Image: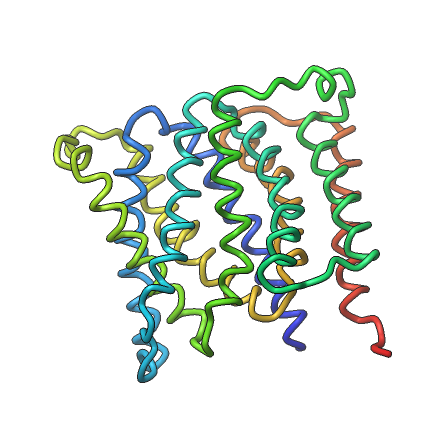
Length: 297
């Protein structure tokens, strides 16, 4: 299996796990302060990643040289997650997923600024088709719903978080000095956790943890293990093997996965017309795979 194929499989899993954060986050966003929740989430995720690193032989010497790098990455990822849950206080999960689909194009722009990565015509076509498919899924094939789309306060807040996410992706490659994905993930989650503990300490100190609902604890574990530890490893693993725009193209699958999550959680089945959007996202991913397989001149 080539490095590129490994990167694509990692991002396929990434998109499915990220989608769960939208649906579960929408259920508990108003029950706990987003910064406090994310601080605890990062700390738990760091423990999971540390255990994983020890199972794989520990950290290499000088893995944490220039620790400011982890501070930058942890800060960017922390901003994204805090604003995601802040936005979900008012934005429906599927609507937030629509905002998330703006990340690939922003990531492509930041990748050019930071890495001088150029967006090829094939990749641009894939991004366009994937974006159209995502919007099709989000609005269930209803053109009237698309035209009437109104950006609310929650969506606007989450958009700022998505800008942070788009910067984070090329920054991983820019700041990596040969460290493994697990090592980089541990440094990122520890740094993000420390920054958020300082920022959110006033909120953390007054939370009555014993009276939090079950959905908060379920979401905390899910987001700490699956949607933080696992997805950060997957994202950094893929970023070291694929161009930034191609990595973030997989976010176009997230709305489809969100609908699956919503169905599983009992929020209804989307109409058959939404399947057309799924087909478009598959076509977009096929174009990306073809781009990888294209012969080099």
